[in-house]
Image 1 (spheres, rainbow, N blue to C red):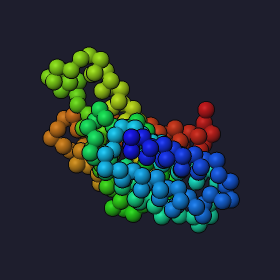
Image 2 (image 1 turned 30 degrees about the vertical axis):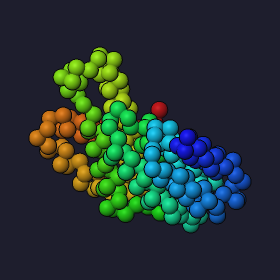
Image 3 (image 1 turned 180 degrees about the vertical axis):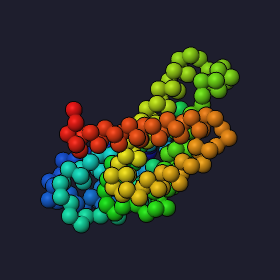
Image 4 (image 1 turned 45 degrees about the vertical axis):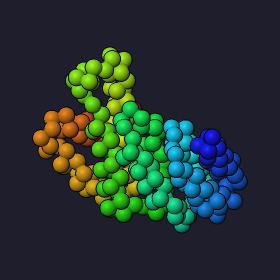
Length: 224
């Protein structure tokens, strides 16, 4: 199928990025690798195979750039487009069809230059929080007459997504301390929401981020 071919080509390009000589990678990675991956992602029909390939490919390309080491003044001009592509897909997905690894892909992209503008960071956080907070509660699953197994899977997916989002926020904070203000801006409405579940989940996310920051501080201080 067209989707299978596009997915295979995405993996082919990201494989090139992973194995290319480091001194040749950066001049070509923007247009000849990431640009082509994003072009392939615009297929009219996007199935799960294609979305998974996109997430994996963006993660691998971002990791390949970081593996070069001192990138100097290198800036990935397609970074904003790559992030927007992932966010568009996230917003269109029901909670139980969200591709695993999408938050990791966003995290790896966030480590690259150029840094995101304030409004872009706020949009990134708002979309990701909306996804994590949209998971149905156990009570909602019961009302929908879902099986116990489905409820357990939902709980695991929500916990994993919360942890992944926490790591993403931690990465953003490392890159720019002002991201804390963006996080507060996004979460303040959720923390004071009339929806008890939304308040609870926003607090869970805050706790997850604080725990990650605490562990990072321990590593910096050399604590065991």
